[in-house]
Image (cartoon, rainbow, N blue to C red):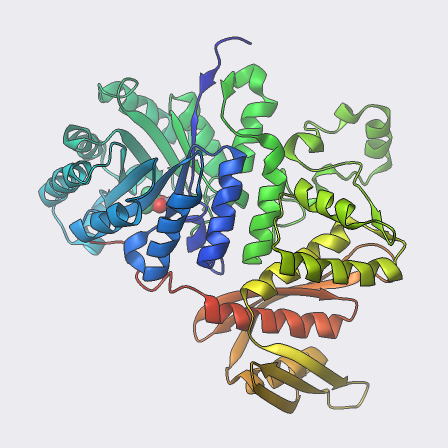
Length: 517
Ligand code: KIV
Ligand code: ZN
């Protein structure tokens, strides 16, 4: 089809996404993720909220320098301090933008901001024009909680922002309250009411998933004329998350016949980027998550299997290769050399430094010696372990022993070290895993509360590895940990230690994320 309409993809994985419990990343991890998003073809990357902490500031600054193609933006409340922080963080960024927001709904203005309508309008004028004066040619304005904002006041706030120099108007459904028809109608009416839209100003959509409608609302907005969609990879984000990047772009691609819309997304990079995010944050997606879930291209019932064997399209509307999932995976084995391993990593866009690569190769050889064939499911957990341990060097499990059985009190002894410090502790517990976690707590000097624990077999056969993903609450901070081993007690202990080590590197991202000025 000719004359496709183009929409801009604004990715906020590193800002709204990072606000998901347990999704905090280190600066290096954010840079790695930003590079993957850039490679994916994202037009605008929201890199963080610079005023909220020195770590956030440094992440936005370094992403601004590292990203090659995308425009990089930082978030600012309507305050001079916030805008200055984005200006300073992005001063060396060649394609920079600022995203300024203030709440406009009666609820937020009364209870959170404690500001009148006039005060809010004055603040918009003052701060949007201040952002322009700081040299930002691209200024996005968001009336927070737009879908619960009174219509007349919403229009006033938007027009005020345009008059002060905003050239993207974003309409956040902050609490995921809107219904698709209603949200679409609001977008259409805004487009109609603000004369600059469709000319010098872009109209953007930002939907949360509290009612599972983030994608439907975003598509309704696109249908109603939105030029930009704000999304996160894997749909991570505050509470139930944001509209998911992969679902949006694949809906547009699979139903190109209906939409006739294109984006700059390089679809083959979608799956590798999703894997990278899961490995970095430890936030694993569910098996039935659209587009990326393990079950999405597997067929259980005989009728479906038969159909797919005869003709793939009977039960599949996407080709896994279109999103970078390979069907005929390159199976590695004992005789695969370093080049084959490298090729496999390239397919997933995983870049390791020499030291990490050496560690991976050693682990790979051990597994390949035990198993005839090493599948992606065997290899990717190893990469994840290496990425998380090398970014979280800290406590190390030297050895452990557990005693358990019918009629026995389960006991664990662990010996752990960190730099020159070495500790050995024995504890009992409700089971061997509980006992080992308690022993680790005592060695490290913390008191962790397990909030999530999942174990799954990865790889095939009896020698499959047990992969443990867990989340621990340590002094009110949620940290994810993951590890794999053929011994599930060891995998559990290593995952717990991984979480403990991540905590030390965890940026103080949430401390200052108060969103009222
Ligand atoms: O959901 C929201 O309202 C936001 C704003 C900061 C745009 O994330
Ligand atoms: Zn949001």
